[in-house]
Length: 210
Image 1 (cartoon, rainbow, N blue to C red):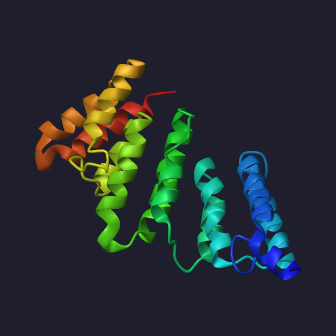
Image 2 (image 1 turned 120 degrees about the vertical axis):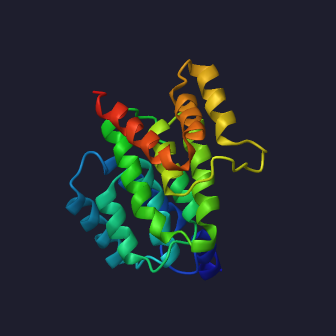
């Protein structure tokens, strides 16, 4: 009975219980901007020494790291993983931040750059395009631009039948900011030869922001 109860509490056949994993995720999520990377890593290693984490446990730690855009802790976690199974989920968490300052926008892009090599080749366009729609929902113009330049399809539609133009329009209507709409219109009109120039101008616009 006791063994069965213990197994029921665990997120996987071995490793941390759901409560232990949740506690570690909260620690990482709250500590990312407050503690040095070395201290965060040391704490994770301490937990792992006490109860060895499973592959699933290690991967679930990516959620708070991607959400808080800590590239150093992300690199450490990816080094412990052979592969990333739920890459779409972590890409999504990377673009969900509410902080709009330039430094955080650039951190999101760095996180995405780090994750992209882990996308299976036959899934790359779909994963990038789904992430692009998530970013568009938040009005993340520079992130959308980066994803488009990385291979996202601006004509991709999700299971709701919506594309990036619709999400950009909804954001503009809701918040009165049509920057993303302008970028997408320029991108569409630019033609293949000029599209990289459109993103370069977009980056120039952001570099002038404080």
